[in-house]
Length: 117
Image (cartoon, rainbow, N blue to C red; front, side, top):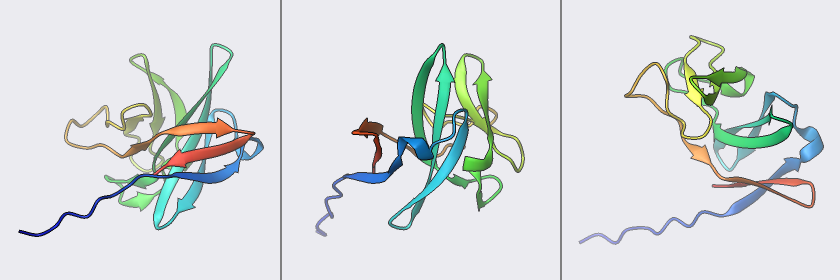
């Protein structure tokens, strides 16, 4: 029987909150993973989301460049390539049940954005 490697997620300091652009995305490289970070203003409140930057349909690291909005009461980003919408909470593709992207927890401490990966 093979031993399974335990993967322990850890928090990574990726940027200052001033590096984020409201209602837009930025990209950060954590190890070998590109993460798209979105700051979304909704009802006067800033919400932060982090998803994998890899667009599984367009096969490119481009999701941080997508347009942020709402669709069917979900906060989404539209891929800049083929315009599929990814739910920023769950990572699910709204147009295709068989496609999704990873999501990552985000928090802010002392004006620093931290992502758990």
